[in-house]
Image (tube, rainbow, N blue to C red; front, top):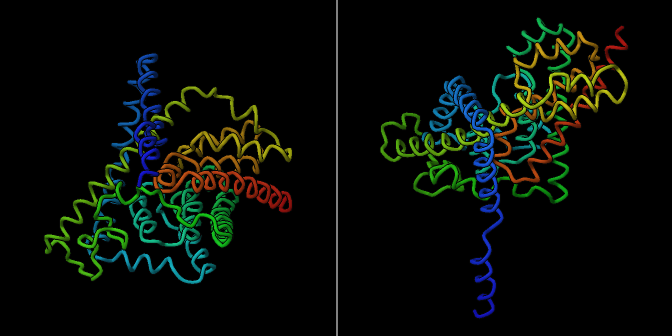
Length: 354
């Protein structure tokens, strides 16, 4: 027992790295607010306005996920993500590419799947493919950038899901990413996470669709809404602050200087430049149209749009909030590599069709 005393004393003397990171982030925020009070106020207003705009989608995601937990149907959903890896990755990539579900609207659901031990490969396939397009985005992209670009973007979403999910499965088979979820995931969601890893009182194994008739299940519903809501609001607010900073401080011609033309290196340049700019869905299409009109090639435009879409605040924040840092960095690397690959393939396909 005495051998443990120096270790415990050291733990008391030195705060954990996580606490130091939080303290550093808080000091950075306070310093920025003191140095640029006008921008601090404008960024706060920008974040609040965007949160209000997406509040219906947040509420829908919260209520649906809380209902899943309270009714005990999480086991059914988790079962749909289990089975043969190839089939699950194919299904997850297809769902992500074709359905209008992505980003924070599924954050609590994916949190439950991760906490319940669902394999990371199909989840990664869905995460990578879902931010790129959906039926509504397909129609608007066709009207803004042309039908070939819209079809290429949809096919790219499916290919990226397959590619990312397959690479993830290989990495897991090699012994990596065994525990992808953050250790604090269950605490962040509250004890009523509704999964096998949650407390036995709040984990409802039996299906009971009319959960509002049960006091225990109503409590599970409420705790799920509160825990998930706190998680979503916190991360989204930070994401919109980052988006404001990027929009304000990046020069307007930043993209054009690095990713114009049809040279082979313009596709990687477009992906690398597009990834940190946080392009969100529909708002990115007019920008891409303007870049193409000013000389950007179709391949670089595709790479720029895909990389920015996958790493947008809407798509990347749920990943960062739920998984460990190596898994999140892998997600970002896969986004950039997939965007480069699809940009080259799309440009090559157009050259063959010309």
